[in-house]
Each structure stands twice: as structure tokens, then as C-alpha cells.
Image 1 (tube, rainbow, N blue to C red):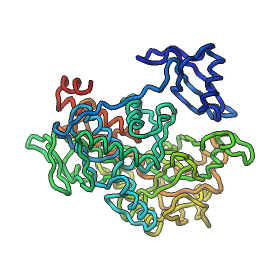
Image 2 (tube, helix red, strand yellow):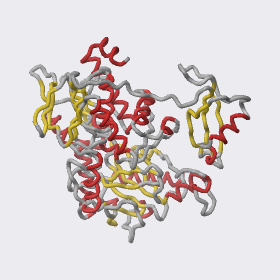
Image 3 (cartoon, rainbow, N blue to C red):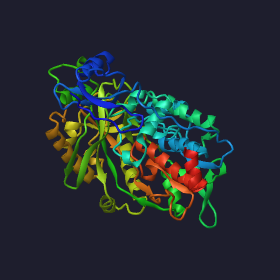
Image 4 (cartoon, helix red, strand yellow):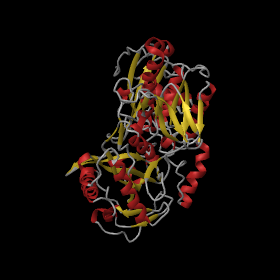
Amino acid sequence: MNNGSASDEPNGPREEVVLRLPPGQAREREAIERALRKQVDDPGEWVVLRRSLDARRHPATVELRVGLGLSTVPKVRGAWRPVEDAPEVIVVGAGPAGLFCALRLIEFGLKPVVIERGKPVRERRRDLVALIREGRVDPESNYCFGEGGAGTYSDGKLYTRAKKRGDWHKALGWFVEHGADPDILVDTHPHIGTNKLPGIIEAMRHRIESCGGEVRFGVRVDGVLRAREGQVTGVRTSDGEVSGQAVVLATGHGARDVFQWMAEADLAIERKPFALGVRIEHPQTWVDRRQYRLAGEEAAASRDLPPAAYSLVTQVEGGGVFSFCMCPGGVIAPCATEDGEIVTNGWSPSKRNNAWANSGIVTTIEAEDLDAAGHDGPLGGVAFQRAVEQACHQAGGGGQVAPAQRLTDFVRRRVSKDLPNCSYLAGLKSVDLTKVLPGFVVDRLIAGILDFERKMPGYLHEEAVVVAPESRTSSPVRMVRDPKACTMPGADGLYPCGEGAGYAGGILSAAMDGMRVAAALAQAVNGEDGAAAAAE
């Protein structure tokens, strides 16, 4: 019996077979071989092409899509070439969008000059330690700014629903080429882990430099240079002017000063919806037992199951409420980019072996919400974010101490007498968050959480804690660009890119957008024939 289908991919498998195995056997070659022989008389060479956990079944099973006639998973490697003497393109920002844009530019025969306001990835760690222990925010080096951008220290989840926007398999392949576990090519929900990302990011930088590209750290971009007809010819930086054939803005949405100088320069930016709320943390053991339907004190590890995650969404009066960036076995981290504000985010190490599971629980902030709050104009969303973050800082009492509340008390709108243990190391202060956050946000969150309790009984756990705010889910500003050429209207040669520009929502989607922008840029610089020839 064959549950698979023949592949029509070039150099693909001659046949695909679907297997379902217990979690403990899904990575054992001997167990997979035995299961294969029950369906195929002579499987010959084979390789696992896709692996996904199905926790809807009880007990949970792992579904494997196995390709016959292959010895390894097809890998994608970059067509790297020397570009030290090639035309120069300025890439502002060394996050996922900027790095992948730079790598793709090298494939097209262009020299990327990456300008990053922060520090190299390993030097950033000292500033993060100071942020956590002393509550001191370095506005140029923090969880958002520095080599790898916010993605370096925000979990390393590589799942995206935006696969039609770019070559996601190529993006994953480049992660593997630079040191990521090849399993990310196979797993349905690939994850690298914050502990492993720094080495991978560093390897990407070495690749850029070895091909003749440049990466300049500690340089902040304060504006763009424009010819009389509006053509962008370079950037104005804290270290002087830098000229290039084109400029890619891949700054991330934490760089609010970029939005400010763009508005002052009459560059095309506009307000867009974003999400805001809180980060909620549960004991990981409870999430495991609920999601895997474990009995008593049974642990997920006893069944060879990974730490469980959840995904929740509901519609309430006024808008939607949903979970965001769920981090099993993870940590809540302070991600402010300026003094006087509190911002939280979550991440997990590669083993996801911490005692807690945290997730953003947020609601979408629409234009009508901003108008009602008196925050109009293209920077209205930024002003709303900042007001919430400053209110939370004041409620926390200083440094990076975050205001917090037991989840059960949050829905009852009362101060918690004490707080449970929590992964947030910068400190918590018990406050009534319903009096700190905007009223309409509180109303939606409470209604949503009560519905989550209905959908996932036990969600209102006594040891669950609410930490505020989760405010940087996506950019509140969109840098307008042509859908095909990717340039900004009225600023030819300026290419908005990635999350900060409003065109991505995670590491993988930002990487794909960087690659897409590089292709559009190369066509403009090299000409259509030249770009095609360089890409071969």
C-alpha cells in the first residue's frame, strides 16, 4: 500500500510515502526503515522530506513524508562570487532582511555595504546583561539593534504563512549553509534557537566580507542623500556621507528615529495596523499536559514529546485577540530601545528546556482606535506604542522592572497580593494592569482570555502571570513602495525592506523580503538581461 504520490520535481524522489510513528521512533533510522518495508517491498535509498507532530491524535504521533530514491534532502547553496570591484549598494540594517538582501545582491554581482548602528553579535551580549541586571538601555545596542537585529535574540522560529512571497526553501537552505541544523529543511515548524543564532549570523557576515562586501558597525543612518530630481544617491550617517547605486532600508520597526527623519524629509510613509497587548506565561508542564492530554504528573519527555505550544485566536467586541510568538520552554526578555519605556518579547533556546511557556496575547490596533485615542498622522501608531510603553515603565517604578499581575487577577481587575515565579529576570512589580493599559485594549484582552479559557480549559491558571506590554509585534508604519519595482514613489533608488518597512512579520518572511528586494534592485541596476545572467 502506498499513501504517497510520485514527485514531479526535478531531481526529486521517485515516490513519496507517508508514515505515522510514535514520537520516540520518528528520528530513528531503523524504526523508519521497518515502517517503510511494511508499505514498500524494496525502498532502496530514502530520506525524510517533511516531519510534523500531530498532537490532535491521542497519543500524539509524528507524520513523516519519506522520499524514495534520494540519499539526502536536496540542499540549496548560494552562488557566491567576488564583488569587491562591483557597483556598491547600501543596505541599512543587519537584521534578517538586510543580511539576506546583502547575500542575494552578491549572487547578482553587486557589492553590499551593510551599515548597522549596533555592535557585532557577540559584543551585544554585554549590553544585554547590563539591560537585564542594571535596567540600563543602550539606545544603539540592545535586543533590537546590533548584528542580526531583533531576530538574533527573539527565538529563531522560522515558520511563516507567507511562502508565496518568496523562495522560503532557499532562505532555509542559506541558514543551513551557514550553520543551522539541517532539520529545519524538514520540520513543519522549524526552529533554530536563540543560543545558536549568533554563530549563524556571524557566519553570514563572514560570507559577505569574504566575497568583498562590507559590514560597518556602530554607524547610525540619519537620512538619505537625494539628487535634485529626487534620485537617492546615498545616506547621511553618524560617521559621514556614504554614496551608492541604491539604498535598501532594512532597519526593523524598533528604529523609530528612522520613521521620524523620513517624515521630516517628506518620504512616503503611512500609518498601518499593528497589534499590542501583554505577554502571558504559564508553567510549561501545564501546557504539555493540556495539549498532549497527559494524565496526572506524567511529563511530555516520558513520551519523547517536545515542549508543547498553543495557538489561540478569537473575535470579541471591538476586534480580534490572538496569541503571538508563542515560546515553549522560553524566556520573557526586556526589549526596550530607549530609556523610560518597558517592552517585552519572548524567546526559546534550541532545546526549549526552560520551566515556562510564554506567548504574546494581543489585539489589533486599527486606524479607528488610533483616531479615537488622538493619534493621527503617519506616526500615530508610534505615538500610541510609546505612550503605552512609558506608562508601563512608570508603573514598574524604574529601570526595566515590568508591571505584572496574576492572570486570574487580571481578568478580575484587581492587584495581585504576590506574583508567581517568572522567567523575566529584570524584575516584576505587582500592579493592576487594567489601570495602566488603554481601556479598550484591556476590555478586548479580558474578553479574549475568557474565551481562551473556554477553548483551552485551565488557561486561567493560578500560576500564570501577565507581564506588560507586548507592543512591538509589527511595524506601526509602512514605507510605501511599488509592488513590483520595490522602490519608494518620489525617491527612485530607495528600497524599503522587511519588518520595519511593513512588509514582513518574522525572521523567515523578512529574509524572503530581503531577497525579493535584492532581485528588483539588481534588475534596475544591471538591467533585465544583466540581472538574469548574474543570477544563473
